[in-house]
Amino acid sequence: MKQAIVIDSSREIPLELYKEEQIFPVGYSIEDSKGQIYSEREHTHSLNTGRLMSIVNQDKKANIFAPNIKEFVELYTFLAEEYDSLISIHSSLFTPSVYEHALLAKKMVSGITIDLVDSPTIGPASGLFTAELVKFIPDAKNINEIRKKAIELNKRISAYTITENDNLVKEGKGKVNTQKTFPFSFTNHNLYHYFHTQWTNISQDRKAHNLFKEANHRINIVSKTKEVESIFYSSSSKYTKNTKDIIRRFRKVPKTETKQSIISYYVLGKEYASVAFI
Image (tube, rainbow, N blue to C red; front, side):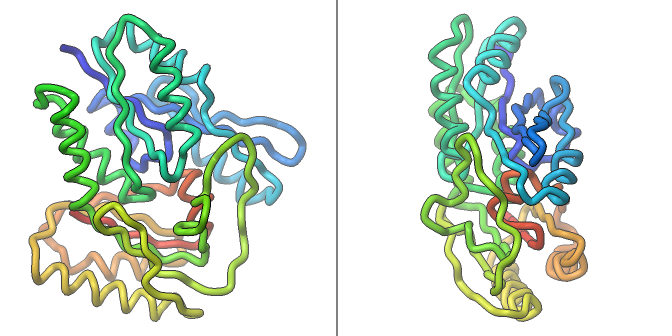
């Protein structure tokens, strides 16, 4: 059976994995304040996220549009010509409209088996989840084994995220429907923890430095009680040094730096740092 993976671009994985692992992304689009629309997806394995992020940073009135049903149907139909089955990975928590569009598109495409996998991860945690699940999929006997693995990964992955934004555990959690504006200024910094499929705000401080110390302490305790297998991390340039200081102790652990997605920018804001590990 020849199998491919479909993700929306909120999954923060290195771009080189697209071709290596037969991963096909659907992207978002941005409409600037002048009404010009820019698409994130260029080609089968190509995204121009950087350009869209630049527009968002410069234009505070820019709106985001989720990939629609038509885009999913077109991609699923295209892949049906070469592949026997698809695993489509999305988040019903952070991108519920995207998850729903994928679910509806699945019913409209024939000649191929399409199964959806859900994960409440975002940022580097979403990349770690996807990368680990993709490694398991080729040897899985059926979709039930894949879903069981997804449940296990969601419970095993931990992440600490520091951001000025409070959207992460707010009511509505950054839902992307047809239009949303981006928040830009916040007073306090928040330290969030992802553990056993839940995001929790565990600390708040006006100084990000204090939260980095707390995150570092918590991760240090974890490193002494369990063997860390893999780390995915990402941060804005403001917090690059702080983030690398946290992961420096894991000398022999594989580390993957990811670039912020448009969706994590929407949920986490411009200034952020996130470390996910399993």
